[in-house]
Length: 490
Image (cartoon, rainbow, N blue to C red):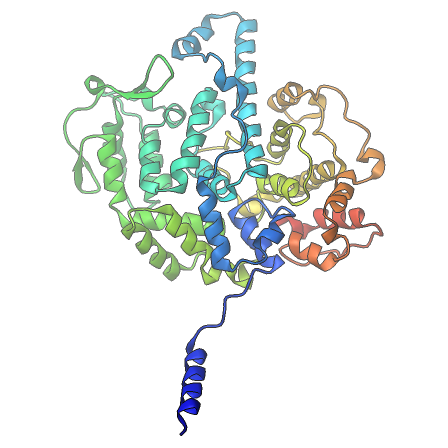
């Protein structure tokens, strides 16, 4: 054989062994990735992600985790803050003073909700806010019981920082978090009567999962937690050795003395790595985890020292994540639904606190999960009642209308929220003269979608519409997609 022919054949053979070049993202893949790892794809995201492969797109999201926060902090944080003494003394005040104090704190908590929603909508790190929301539903604390906005703010900050880096550091932070301590009554624990609330949730809901500990483990863990108090200034947790239960305690067959010892012990259990890996699988991929794959990823997670970014990367690049079977398997939470609509259709946000009122109406009041297990999620979001409410909220957003006025809100706290944002008067006439004006503006700003309804559907829906659009104008047809049951899933 001639030398040049031999070289040619060899080159062709080597080329055949090389994998084909990775394909760039399709519009459907961009929408799928940003629905799951963020809060929907904004119109400009399709141009940004179009040249990227799956790997490059996921790495871009991970690289943005440390991007600066764009939304200014709530203004109240720059003001003099009530200390622990003030909170205790308020019970001795007149009813009018107590109500004014309570209303001011609720207004501050509403400002935090609005701040966070705004950062979800317009921030540079959608994956950071997604992870923080996951941890908010995992390590639950509720303002309704904590009643100190500053503590809730610090907890959200913990989720947004350590919740994107290392689970071990996040867990240690929760082990001395003021909001968590007030929510689970840690400062009330005493030598003669240790409070078991935090001990139980730490083992069952935060780390090991049910079946991986005993009741005696909970009792011994509770003893190790006695001695924590909130200081009289900014309510930062402080440990008082004189108030602690002295001596060793036996947890999971090991000897511990302090809260820190218990947390270190829990991090040595492979069950913790598996529990958290499965939690993130459920959040990012599907309600039906692949046991073998979860075990494999959990082993890598454990061996990495609980590094979160490699685990999230593994999940987002897994075949299961990109499988057609994963499409449309997750029901959008109220935050997904509202924030996603605003992002996807470039809707103006006059006051993000108003969006917090809408998510509360739909059952997800940020900073106030319903109980220690957080929001149930999944199909629990969808009932006959909530489906009607979800359609009503989406219609208001499309028409540029505010939430219902205070007098039409379903409860007293929601009515207070409405008054705080100036919704104590009657709402404008429905539909802004019957036109989806916000969606008309969307097409004016993004004409790319005007002439390609197929592209629009792929960019908006995880599944084909149940009822294909029938109306004549593009805004009205888009509104039909927005109100279609297929828009409820991601």
